[in-house]
Length: 363
Length: 164
Image (cartoon, rainbow over all chains, first blue to last red):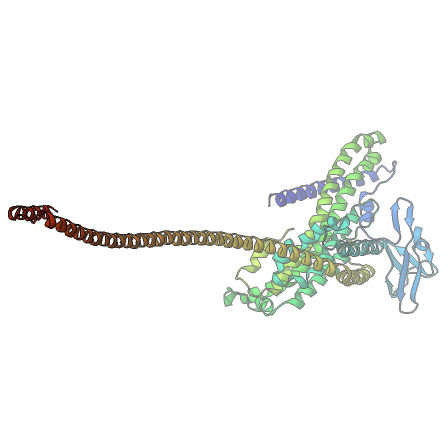
């Protein structure tokens, strides 16, 4: 309890600090542009570039791993080529990349109107997604083999590393939230937890993608949760929406829309919480680090050298918090999913149940 | 800001990869892992149950032993008591029999003595009679010469015989 309060406090502090540094950075950025003598350093662009998806994986400045671009258009079918063909604003095969989006262009380099191109490229995020899938598919079948090999013996190696986490998801998340029918949902909860955890941790590596801080990813996870909750909802769950227990009839015209909104608000909050937490964490760290470069472009190299130890100390501190957040957000997403499933499969509803778990949500 | 607009491509890949991941992990990881964990927990539980059962059995066994011991002790006492009674009875019996035998022997001895004495008395009487007759004969032969001496003799004899 106390720990979660401290976590919240730290998060809030970090967010406040980051908003301050961001606004300052932007001000400085604008000021910096005016003289025009020194190198321009645009913090916002740099951060957005790092937080967003891209074709090709830029590990460091100038070091880019090309990735396949897969395009589908009604007239030309599926086309596959390397992302290096589109680097540095090149035009390839009538395609040009603009702000990370690939458009059909004509000979003159003008965008062709109405030519719809569907981009299924293996972008940086998709590559990271596949990488995490490979990690998960290597790790857990290995753990599973460990159980077959060490049958009747104490767990060993990676098995004993991950067993407490698996048990935690089972005993602390699934069992108390869902109740006796948890077994059916446990595989999904475990997949969800470890998928988010591995991707959160991968995202903390330098040069890595920001997968769990991408709204498409969190959207898919939230929609799957929503579908599972809706399909496992029993009579009580749906009746509770049409006729909430303990509510006067006069209030029903208000309560029913509220309940229906609540139905969609749950996955929406899941989606936004994970996306915002992870993206915010990345933005904070990037903002802190850009202070060094800002100092260089606004003052001098000596100033930037002078402030860098302080900035690095802060960055280290925030990275540790991010490490915590990586676990925390995986836990929260899984816990809330389990609670939503629990409320859907529960046999009887208490009158104030809805209030009960709104209060326990973590933001 | 396209940070908030989901990309179609990533949506597609995320759905495909996540569902594939879920299906593969469910079959090859979660099911065997949760089954093994469950099995291990059952094993531990049954081992604990068995230990508890054994403990209870041991207690019962101990109680049984105690009971057996008590029983054996009481049996031993009963046997000892029985033996003592038998022995006492035997002693008493033989004592009684000895007493009876002694009595009988005493009786016999007494009877024998009585017979002996009677025989002795009869013998003595016979001899006294013979002696008396002899004496009388001799006296008569010798003394019957005068009347007074005869009378004196008779009275002497009589007084003597009375003394006898």
